[in-house]
Amino acid sequence: SYTKPYIESIMVIPAQKEPIFFDKLTAASTKSSWIDSYAYSIEDKYDKTISSPWTVIFPTSHAFTIIEKEYYLFHMAHRLIDYRHIDEEVGIVVFSINRDLLDELCNEGKSASDPSGINFITNENDIVMSFPENQYVGTELSRDEEDRNGGYEEFVENTDLFGGGEVMV
Image (cartoon, rainbow, N blue to C red; front, side, top):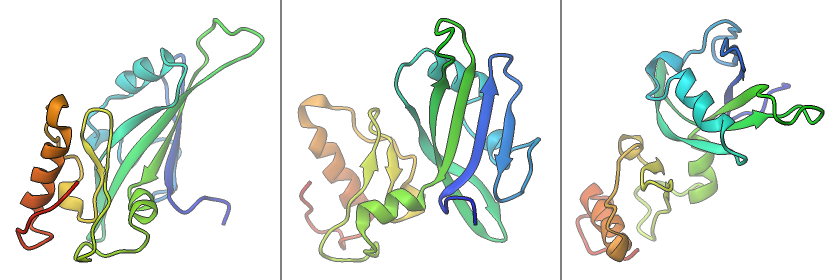
């Protein structure tokens, strides 16, 4: 296979904003399997990414369901640069990556019921990007900067993964 196992889609959005796709699940090059259900439009992705010198990560969300299997994707986007004309907008590239990659890296094969603990990932806005149970992906956590861990502890306690017992973050 020429594809990486967790990359579900690659999208190039040129400056004209007419996207070009490769969607692994549908093998389509004219339409993405997830774009219509995602919170960020093509224009939003383009505008946020083209103005950033860094890779932009868009939050994980439910993308689609195929044969009763749910797919959650997060998206990494970066602007394309023509180094001969660095001031010109060329476009952006977006990699749509299966959330299972984050979970595998974060939890190293642990199950959600592992009593020794869990790991999960949030983005800079405290939105859950990866969690052992899909239903919690996309949850927005407390933004209390003085007690940020308190919001994380409350979130984990409310999942009942540890039988409602005390948790420490």
